[in-house]
Image (cartoon, rainbow, N blue to C red; front, top):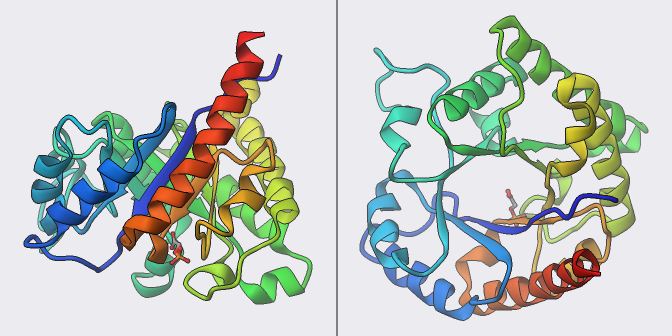
Length: 267
Ligand code: PGA
């Protein structure tokens, strides 16, 4: 029987909120999203982690960081290591397209971030996805496959492997922050590509247990199309995750999927 995968909604606040207002927003989202069996994660900016941790205590909402450095420690001014995050955050977003674009993060650098996460028990959400030109050239699938292959190759070079608890987010770059979403069926096709690539990269049968999220202009109106696909296990939400009502709608829809999966598993 196919494994019952978790349903996960992860908020990525990006460079928004301040320590003064982040706690309040997190508490409001927590209260508005109390839905059984949906894993909720909020990733505020680093400087808001402490405030959000306090606001989320006892809420059942997990805390994540938006980034981690690829090295363990040392002369990296302004950077934050996995050891610094351990005990504060439980999750880390690794390799989102904005950091690939703006900070020049390569698959190799991102792979080392996965290693740092594994060393400190942090759950990585590994982001992959193609550019518009790559999709238009019919290379969307090979781009994502190559990203995962390069990531796994770098892990192997360090005698590492894909970490337990890995989550992969499929985020077509052209859908991020644009108001334009992929089609649910395209996301499902990509989820299959991702699990095949993970299986080939050493996970074997365990690849079927890896949650695959969709990200890119997800809203409460758009989420249903993605969660209607059995291979999609939730969403990585940017802009809409700053709005309490949007998060309430998104998590409510995710709750329907979680309940349906639970009912199938109980049969
Ligand atoms: P968006 O961002 O929802 O604002 O498109 C998604 C992401 O970057 O994870």
